[in-house]
Length: 274
Image 1 (cartoon, rainbow, N blue to C red):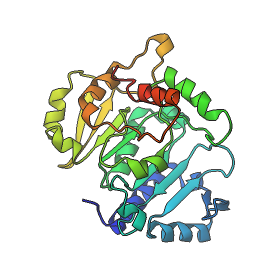
Image 2: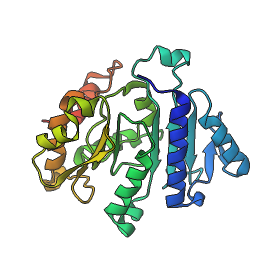
Image 3: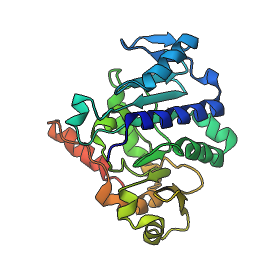
């Protein structure tokens, strides 16, 4: 059942406030206005942000800098069930993402980053979520997507930024396995809850932590690992979790791509299964 947009917006705002307390308000200094132009995130800008959070199907993008990929980023794609397009898209969901630079992980260690991720997730009524290393690039530039495809083949645990796409197509499925994989209804219920999920995972380096009665987070090892196929780091923990979650993993819909591109996409989606 889809939750009221107001309930989700309130939860997202609570997570945003937690994020800002952790990284500092100065980490986000710009926002994209309705025309896609960057505006300074001053008092007027924050009024706009708070107003948009409550709007029907809002899109909010906040960054630390108006140029380049940036180190800090908040992005929210809301979905009001009363919007005509959303009513005709059964897999449309509200989606939110938070970005942190890798030097924060290196300076403070993985446990602090994990604690922050859990704090961000706490108020959210999520079906799934994840945290881990990801490519941060300006994908609209010529040549960048092809470059990322090559690097992702070598480092299979590196994520790709696709929150807008997922907000229209994900539904209740799971968008792959990651260092932290958050699971909620209905997937966790289908797995038999936290105890059922624990029973399917054998590695002592995989932990399952309950988040209330309906949600959980799976942690793959102490530190996030991007993997490296050229060095034989094939990520056995990711593979073990992927085998358990295979029936519920998300697969991009086919939009008539070039057959070779389509085949490459399917290989990438099954990189932890084959």
